[in-house]
Amino acid sequence: EPIKGHFPGADAPLAVAQIDHTPMDVIVVDEEHRQPIQRPTLTVVIDVYSRMVLGFAIYLEKPSAFTAGLAIAHAILPKDQWLTEAGIQADWPCWGKMRKIHCDNAKEFRGTVIGRACQDHNIAVDHRPPGEPHYGGHIERGFRTWLARTHRLKGTTFSNVKEKGEYRSERRATMTRAELERWFTIYVAKVYANKFHYGINTTPLAKYKDGIVGTTTCPGIGFPERIVESTAFTLDFMPFEERTIQGYGVVIDYIYFWDDALRP
Image (cartoon, rainbow, N blue to C red):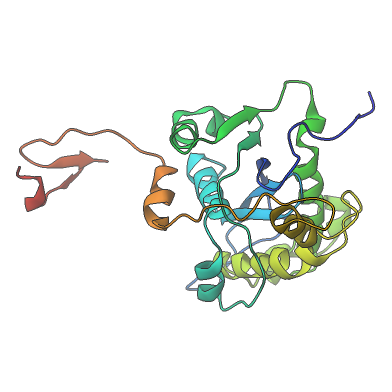
């Protein structure tokens, strides 16, 4: 059936965010020998109202609660330190907790890690209704746009075998995971954010800013609260295992950890 109306509840910045994963269409190399490894996985959190990329994570492992947690934490935390460490000058004014995060029914989104962290920080988690793929349409269209850009990189795998042809992706690969992460930061913060989007009839950055500070005809929601303790906040979204303190300390993965701080 035709899609009618807009995404429910996405009436302002940070009202509804979507999160999803996809393999990137490019091979990365290792840090030391610059030898090809594999395609990394891209996890993105997008603001449905403005289509701004709120945060992302690029890692070599398969989608998991770990990569999802990193992407959510990156979306909520201010980007100032991230941009400074990457040596990038860009306007990426996205921070603050979203009211609701929308995701599919993958196990990493249905586990206790993301659910517990979101509950602790008053973020509602909403799962895509079965048989309703258009509920994830905003981020799916975003993936098509972002991955098409990777086809310009050396080592790209393109989107299909026919398009790839005789191109040797592994031999042409030159970027490490960290370098690809920096490239994607530049792209989403400086190019994508300032490119006209027909779905919102403006650029994602302009739409986001107007929703925050307001316009002459529509008041904004105001600047969201900043997270002060970024490390502690990120750890809230990380996978965890419970252990008891014993006389020998703590055992994790058959490794014994001990410190005098555990004596009491």
